[in-house]
Length: 241
Image 1 (spheres, rainbow, N blue to C red):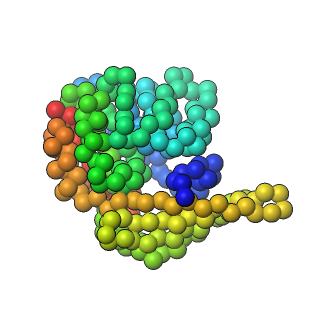
Image 2: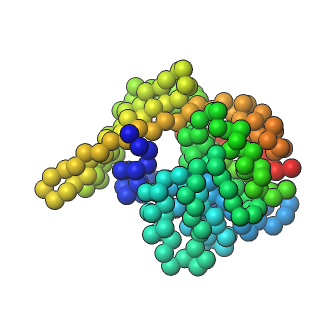
Image 3: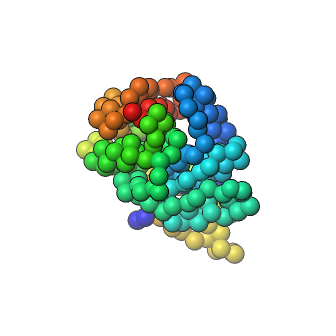
C-alpha cells in the first residue's frame, strides 16, 4: 500500500484543526533569535503546501520538497496566484538536491518521523550541505512515548463526503507506529474504499541531537513549549556551522 496517495485530495479537509499559523510564528521567532537575514526557506516534506504558502504570504521565498507527487499536485493548485509562488520539487528527503543554499530549512507535522532511522544521517548531511553557514534547521517530531500511547487505538475522521478510519499499532522491533488507513469517499450514490499504510518511526530526541552534531550542526535545542507541545510534539532547532 502506498503512502499519501489516496489520502492526498482529502488531506486538507481532514486536518482542518492544524494550527499552521502557530507553526509559522514559531519559525519566525526562531529566526529573530538568530543573527542574519532569513529570506529563502526550504519546507521539507511539505505535503499539500499549506505552510509553504503561508510563509510565502509572509514574504519568504520558498522551496517546497516532498516525495509524494499526489500531495505536490494539491500544493501546486493551492499556490496558484501566489507571487512569488513556492518552487515545488519532487524529491526524497535522503536525495535532497537543491540549486544552492537556503537561509533555513523547516520540516513540520511529523515529517521527520516518516524517515527511517538508517536514512537520518544522510538526510542531516544533505540539510547541512544546503543550509547556509549560520542558518537554521527547525523540525518537529512526535515523541516515542506519545507514539507508543497510540498503540491499539482506532480513530475516525468524518466529513459529509469522506470518512477516514485508521488503526494504530506500535511495533517495538522497528520501533514505529503503523497506521492502517481506510478512506471511504462518496461517488454519487456509492462509496469507494481505498487503503494506505503509514509508518512513523519513534526517534529518540537525544539520538537525533547526536546525529545533528555529527552532521555539523551545533546549538541543538529541544523544545516542548511549542505548537501542540501538549500533544506529544517536540521541536528541535539546530544551527548550521
